[in-house]
Image (cartoon, rainbow, N blue to C red; front, side):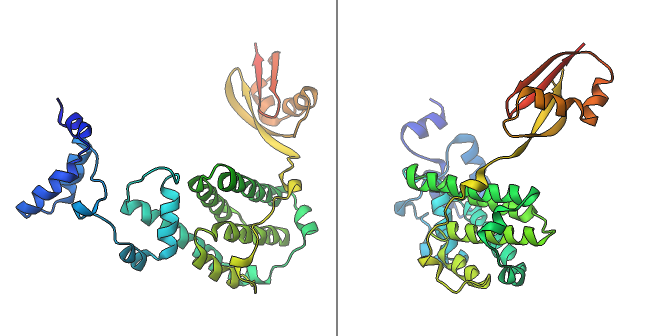
Length: 289
């Protein structure tokens, strides 16, 4: 029987035995342990008897209660065990630091920005696309938290939203209003998992209420409505262009838009279109001879 199979069958790990052996020999070589674990078996499971438990007070002292809570909820679904790793908790710590820096760098601008629901609904272009993502995030979050009980995937969507906000360039007053709503939504959705940082940032953007007493944001169905989208155009199976079309457009409308696109015309270059295949709202494939 291979060593790996023996360890697995007897529910042992390299760490169970190797840590004790190296300790007795006075060897503290973490790289050696990692190498043995990767080649022969899994890492040691956390246990009091093995002396490898993580002291919650030490973790909170080092990273803060919000980071520890967020990491535990994000690491795995609630019904599954997970292995505590330093890399994992550092990832949660970096996310909260990015959130802090993002909001505090725009603190004055966010505090001074006011908006109405009608102004938000009138947003166009990039602002409208961001607002659609914000309200899609609210909808997905509600599903993950209330129906699927998957806190880790809900947190993943908030991380994605922060990434999108980080790449969103504010060019107009409309952009600022949509960004302000997006930040408010992000803080409200994250606050059950990271209440301390969200409460502080909530006040920094000009809120006078306690975030803990606020209701979760509601989905604006109008924001989810798609009016236009971008689809890929393939010519003989190869991606050649991307065009924007009205959502739900019929084949004739799409054909007219695609064949007038400069990139598409360049690739066709007078060739005969034998087939025009349109998968609604998904893609176009043109077969030429």
